Length: 487
Image 1 (cartoon, one colour):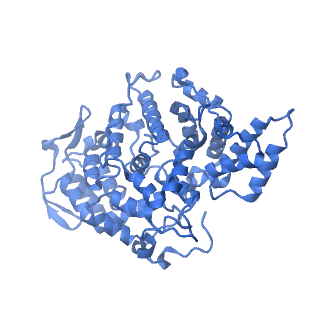
Image 2 (cartoon, helix red, strand yellow):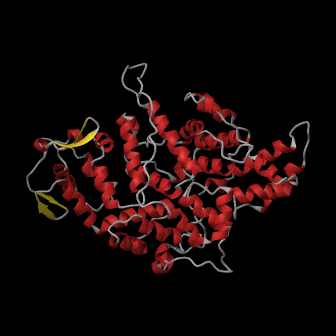
Image 3 (cartoon, helix red, strand yellow):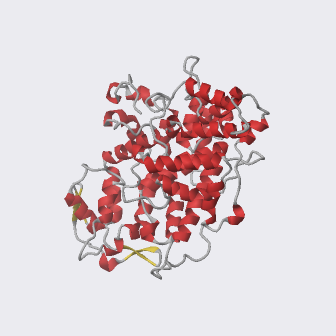
């Protein structure tokens, strides 16, 4: 995925790279870059969004992505009914609630009401990776998801404070076992290694002292509680500072470290720009400095990235593998329509295929989250992508079987990607191919692939494949091309 001829990041001028991009006649704002922005700042552009973005221009389109309330509107409760019981063990089982949470989130991604906030919620979900499989409580996981959604584009300072008291997080990292007589180091370790500083910016002694400061931060009846009797009130030395610190002090000191803004900025770079290189501190300096000076306003570095010259360059373009939710939701948003042209896909129908692709929302594999990148692609997961694409373009049959597993028989739907073609009364093979290529692969459709698909559609043999079926086959091919797997 690397592109030959690109200068290494340490050879670029960071100030110039992070300055706002100014499109020109030689390097225009067009469908290629609008689609790039919507893939990274959301889950892919619908036909209307793509057309509007080209008309509005880059700055106005980025502004629209940020034009949601600073603190998000409260989401509707996804969980309904009892949690359920495992028929084998007789113990409480959260799998029913997990499916409800997953389907509700996928549905919000599909509708695209606040695509950037949902995309940032996904980023933070992987950053503060917590799994319902251990927490085993759907209500706690939903509260955590709402917390991440609320702060997704707000204050990282407030987010990390709230996450340090979040009941699901405290259960996930065994904080009820963190008592003054025997401090549990799980949260203290992860808050430094994974949530704020990164490896190499603290010592083992800092973990031990941090664990002492967080003693007594427990949960009871699904709520945060501070157990005074289990808190170590003695003096502690943490990252070079001394005092009778508690958890609040630890978080304050972490945010005082220059390494914190650098660490988050680097993760944002990998998420939004390029996952194949590790940018040096000097290149990230404009992002990290602006982040710190804003007192950790998350909007500041994200907006810098999405407006920057660097973002609209070969250093970023197609330099990420689509996450399973990006692949599936993006395809649904672009072609998962019914006969009226409206998106009709039931989000429950995607849960099984997302699991086969390797991504169960609310259930990352471990505290480090999903590895992402090339790890998304192996023989089994690529086959799952192909099977999903085949079902989507051919009417949802297999995908609807997935929905039935979640008692969604009354909500089964049919996708008809050809409704887009019929709406424009297209019958010429070249115009059909170009229509879907502009939607699915603007700026990336290889001439030799175009020629083969045009010839394939035009060579209709009613005994084998009808014209409509060959059009569906062509769309399927586009969805399975190597370049379509890249974000």
